[in-house]
Image (cartoon, rainbow, N blue to C red; front, side):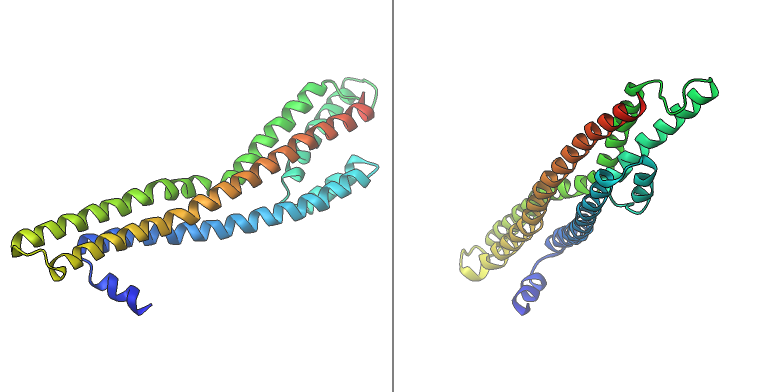
Length: 223
């Protein structure tokens, strides 16, 4: 830690500004990584619990109760949208004097489910754009600091007329510190972004599979 502090203290004002920006990116990125990890773990746990209730239930009303107990489950959100559409259609059919328990359009139910998948997917994508920005921008911010450090070195050489290690070391050290800081901010963000993107694709697949299960159950029950 002392070496890091000394390296930071030895840098110029521009390099300190670059390192400050990189530190902010890194801090926010790590915070969002932890929040996203908690969100996805909760989604996985509540999805498992909800789908067990869904497959075990004999009435959709019972599943609605289970869905309300799983606010963090994307599958529960998809179910709620489909169930609300079913209820609305059943009420319309009953007011029209049609057979109780029938629905007018299975396609409308599917559209409601697809819309809910989009909404739940958007919730899961939250924070990922910042991680992508961190992964792509911070190496270039670090590169700016690197170039500035090299320019500082050349100015020092020109001013002193010497290429001794005492002359070039501060600028080179400044360059390397900025390069390392840029990579330190970018690498975890890249790894986390790709890992979370894979998890979100898996969640999307689960929601698509659940849509088919819901439609099959609806067709058997209401048509």
